[in-house]
Every structure is written in C-alpha cells, then in structure tokens.
Length: 200
Image 1: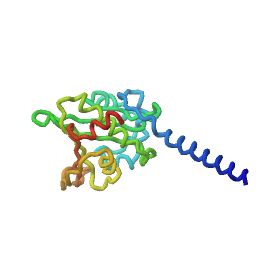
Image 2: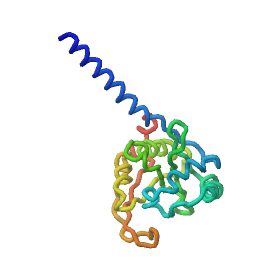
Image 3: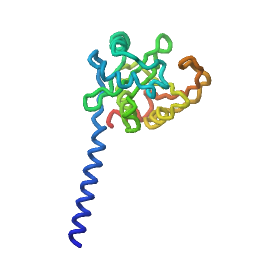
Image 4: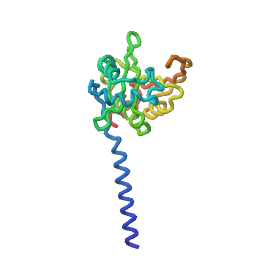
C-alpha cells in the first residue's frame, strides 16, 4: 500500500513538473525592434494563408519581398515591435499614429504565426504594449483596434486585455476587395486596467 502511495505521489509530482514546463514554454515573451536579419523568421507567417486571412496583405512568395517589407515598412514604422518567444521572432505588433486633430488616438494591430495561436501569447503582447504606449506617447488618449467580425480569436484577445467593445462598423473597409464589417475596440489612458498592466 505504501508503494502505491509513493507511486501516486511521484505521478503527481511529475505531472506538476510537466505542467510547469509547458506553461514556461510560452512565458518568455519579449518585444524588440525589427531587423533585416528577421526575414527568414517573418516568412513563417507571411507565407501562411491562415495568418493573412484577416490582413490587408496577401501571402508573400519570396524572402526578397519579406526583406523589402522589413526595410521599407517595419523598420521605419513609428512604433513596430517583433514578438519574440525565447528570442525567436514569432510575430509582430504595432501602433499606427493618427495626425492632426486625431493625434490623441492610435491603432494597434498584430500578427502571430499560426502554430502559436491559442497560447495566450497575443494577449500578453497586447498587454505589454498597453503598459508602455501611453507613457512613450504622452499625447495618446485612446488606443483602438479594428477587428473583423469573423475574427473571433482577435476579438477574444481584446476582451481579455480589457478593451471596450464599442460596436460594429458595417461595411467599414475593403479586405482583399470585399467590404467587411469591423468590430471597434478601445482602451483609454485613463482606464484603470492600464495601471494594472504596468505591474503585471
């Protein structure tokens, strides 16, 4: 009987260690500036139709195209970061500024390699941005996100982070030539959860 108890304790311990190891696999998330050396990693999601489905761009077909994107769009962008898991690029996240009378708001967008979906990585990355962007851009009052009505995964991310779902903008934009309904989400600099992110 004692041997049975010992075996059960060992199984529980091993199960606990295994669970901790799995959780840790996705805990080391960092954001950094893009580099031309990221082209090969970027190709993992730039060539994936599942990823590009709700994006304005079509799948890339060459590394040269990825290099061009990095050199002419990602690197010069006002606020663009690479999402890294244990220093390996697995996606990107950005905040696009508005101009003139709309300078008080910015639009957040992100993309993540499909094999990392559903692991809480996007949620963590959005929280990381929300915890710093209002400090880095003190003029910013509102961070907003436009999410396709059929993109349930990204809607859940915004809700988990604490963005307010403001409503559906019907036929708001063209996506790959077709008019799409978009859900508007927002986070204000004065929302209490912003302070929580800084200590999360």
